[in-house]
Length: 263
Length: 305
Image 1 (tube, rainbow over the protein chains, first blue to last red):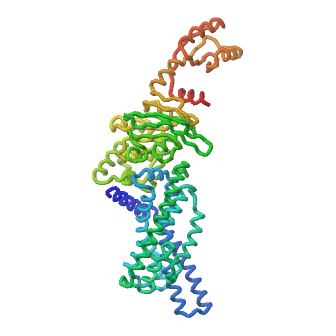
Image 2: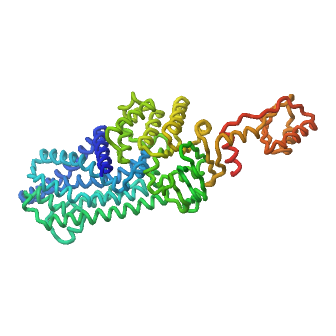
Image 3: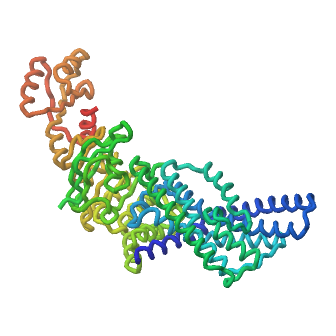
C-alpha cells in the first residue's frame, strides 16, 4: 500500500511539474480545442438558423453540443495520455525503467492516467468555462453528479487507452490510429437519452448519460437511480478488465520480440 | 555468492540467433564488463537479465533467486544518458525513479543529497536535466540506478560520448560504488579503457556466443606475455616482408624495422631467433610489448569473425 502511495505521489508530482514546464503545449492544447469548438459551434448555429430550426430546439441542440464537447475533451485526454505516454517513454528511454517497477506496467499506467486525469480535468473545465462565456450557453451543473459520472466511468476510457498503449508497445507510432479513434469517440458523446441495452454496452456511455442529465436536465443526486450507477460500474469494470487483458497480451508480445524500449 | 547466474541462455529474433546458449556467473561485489561488437548479443543478454526480454531458453538467477522479480535486485541504465525526464531536475528525477520502486520519505531525501554530492551535482540539483551537459546527464542517470537501492547495477554504455575528464570521474565513481557500497556492477561498453581500468572480470561476446570470460588482469598478463616487439638494426626489403609473413602469419610489420609478433608459447622464441640469424637479420631489441585491453578484445572478436 505504501508502495502504491509513493508511486501515486511521484506520478502526480511529475504530471503537475511537467504541465507547468511544458506550459506552452498545455495552453496551445486548450486554445486549439477552443478554436475547433467555436468553428463547429458557429457552423452549427448558422446552419440551424438557415434551416429555420425552432429556437427552443436549436438551443437544446447547442447546449447538448457544449456538454458533448466537454465530455469529448475528457475522453480524448484520458485515452491519448496513456498511448502517447508510452510512445514518449519509449523515445526518452524511460519505458524500461517503468517496466522494472515493482508493480505491473498496466497498473502504473492506470495510476499515471488518474494523475493526468486530475490535471486534464482542469484543462477540460477551463475549456468549458471559456466556451460557456463565449457562447452564452451556461449549463447548470451539479458538480457531485459530474464527478461521480466521470470518476465512475473513466476506467472504461482507460480501457481504450490501454489497448492503444499495448499497440504502442509493439508498433511505437500509432498516431494515425489515434486520429481515427478521435472520430469514433465523437460518436460516443452524441447527446441523447436512449437507454437501450446497446447504449449500456458502449464504453463510458452509461457515465455520459448521467453526465448529460446533470448538465442538461439539472439532475440532482437524489434523481440518480441505483440501476444507473450499477450499469455505469459494470460497464467500467468490464471494459477495464478487457483493456488490462489486451495490454498484458501486447506487453508479453513486446517482451518476447524484444520490442520493449525500442523506438 | 553469485550475484548473477546465467545458464544456457538462448534468444532468437525470427531466424537470427541473438544469444546462443551462453552461461556465466558474476560474483557479488565485482565489476564485470560485457563486451562485444554491435549485434553480438550484449543488450539482449542484459535485457533478459532485467526481465525486459523473455528468453527462448535458459535460466537466470539473481542472488540465487529467480529473475522474474528482477526489480528487487537490479537497477539498470540503458544506452547512456537516456532514462531521464528532461524537464525534471536531477533531484526530481531521482525522487521520481525511487518513488517508482516504492521508496520515499525523509530518508530518501537524505540519500538523494548524498548521491548528488557523490556525483558532484549539488550545484545543479535544481536545474532541469535538458540544461545540463551530457556528462552531467550521464551522472544523473547513473545516480538514478543507485537511488533504487538494489544490489546489482547494470550499466549500458555509461561513458558513451563523454569527454576525458567526465569519463575519469565516472570511472572513479564506479570503483567507489563497487567498493564502498558493495554493489555488483555489470557494464556493457565499447570503451576498452573503461573496461581495463574498472572491471575485474570480463565477458566477450561475439555472434551471440561467449568467446572469452576471464579476469581482466589474467587476460592482460597472458597477452603481454605473448606479444613481442622486435626492432631490427636495418630496414627490411618488401621481399623479406613477404617471406616473414609466410614464415609466421602472426607477424605484424609495423614499419620497415619494427615487427610485432604474437607467440603461442615461449618455445617459439628460439626457432624465431634462428630464423632471423639464418636470414642474416640483426635484432636490435626483442621486448615484451605492453598490451591494452583493446588489443585483447580485437584479438578475440577477430578470431571468431
